[in-house]
Length: 148
Image (cartoon, rainbow, N blue to C red; front, side):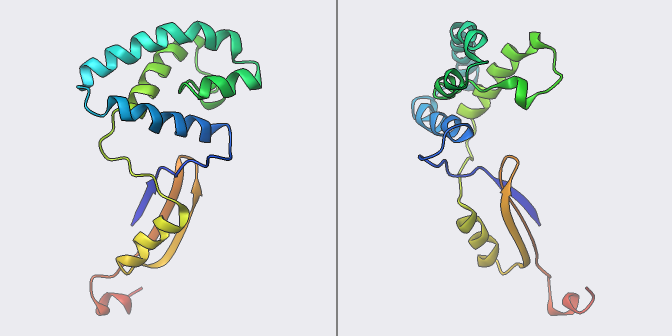
């Protein structure tokens, strides 16, 4: 089995962790908003903040401030993408932050424990590109173990 999980944001770290902390802070306000309405709200929100993004994106302290409002440095994440699409990506990115029903962030240790609790073997859990990645093996019966 292979799985990944969002990571619990570290309060001591900036950059992506600042973005994660903002996501969970804002999500408290949007958890019961219907998706269509949430998309409209996020579109308006990005329309207001995007000019600020264009002015501050080359300033590291400016990007830290923008991450506090869920705006990331899209040129780094989406190298080579036409600049005209960054605003649309920001809308979709923030909408995704605020709308998932099943987002239960984990630590590396808690994610590893999930694999152990279901008696997986050959467990490999580590930080990954989008949070935490994990892999493990579980055989259906003892007979299958001898085949590997």
